[in-house]
Image 1: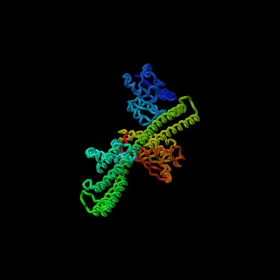
Image 2: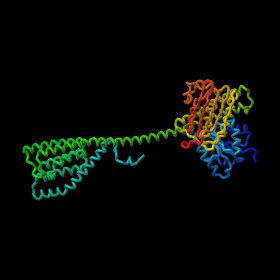
Image 3: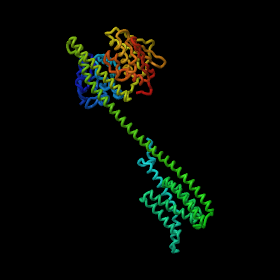
Image 4: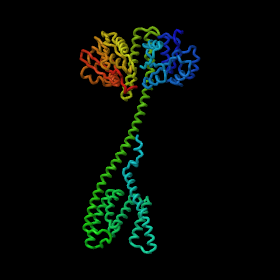
Length: 135
Length: 452
């Protein structure tokens, strides 16, 4: 049983990537994180990771394949049935939240991330609580 | 759209006249057709007679000419409907005259003439039928005079009424039928008006559907725009808020108090900006009537109230204000949009803590009948009379509000709309220098109509 769960985050905004990196490694203290800038060759790169992720955070508006398409690929792959897949979105439209839920994500987090509540959010996520945080 | 209405030939190019004209033409051609078909044996007979007797009698000649004319106008449509109708009426009228004078139709010539009046009304126009009625009237007077003074021989065949009786009968019928023809006028006008109204209604309906489609498209475009704008605006805020916090919390190395203070100002401004973006999004959704609630069952309101109490305590940290949570009896879970109810309560609590310097902010909640009542009271300055209306108006901040600190002026209007969208309400009571109390009422069973 690993100490800390492994995270994968796919995000095209460089500053958001850095924020996540700092929040996870310095605020939460978890270094088992991988961050990808785009979704090209997603499955190949995913399988090439040293650790299989327990949690995958997907930016909805990523390219070339968007968050929904990546979700479908992951769900079709039995190797990732245990992986919790969380959508990350800066858009707060109800239609988007609805489709995130309908498409089968395990949760959603809104950008901007909030440093003050990030720790409790990760704690709740790792405790198995559903996270539907759209601020 | 009722397709039947569209396929009914009510209008052609939106012109009622054209439709009426089409009706007239139909009647005229039907009449002509009947006459041509029925009269054919008679014509053949007349033609044989002429050939065998080698003489032309007046009657036979008349029949041949009349029949030929009627045949021609039936076949040659390019003559024009109006001209055809007039020629046909002319032929009929000539026949009527001859019939009256010569005793054709077993003496019913005068009746035939009277019959022309309604026929004229149908195939020509009301004025033509009135003209026909006047012509019959005059014809009868003339014939009457001619017969009376023996200026022309009386008809050989037929029922012999005295000229005077015939005259009176004819005048009477002419007047009666003239009135009937005139009354046709109103029926025609009414038909025309109906047809026009129907046409207008169809056009209006089509226009409305077109406009609705356009509005729907515009609304979708607007929603998409808002969605992408909110994405674009919030992404950089992520960097601003978080990186300033990283530095101010010492994560990037030691900083002094002055640096920390500056960075906190950056962070709080960025948070304020975020609130503004959210509020503007909400207001534009509300005003486009596209605000939708995400209703969840079994939403634990008690837990939320404890959360709100904690937030309130942070907000009054440096003030002599106590935060009191008063829940007399346990609250059962309710149906509602969790995020939105939290938004309303946060708004009320942030206002209460903003305006109160000393005293207490109290959160009370209880379920009465089928309604959840949540009251947020403060011991602040109260709301003066002149501000009472402005409170729930968008973008209006009261003077007291502006003095105390920046807001967006959107918090309360949005809260009120959210409460109402749930089927509830938001109201307040206030006393100057004593305090204000906002009461949020929400139905326990949520809204079934506006369900997400």
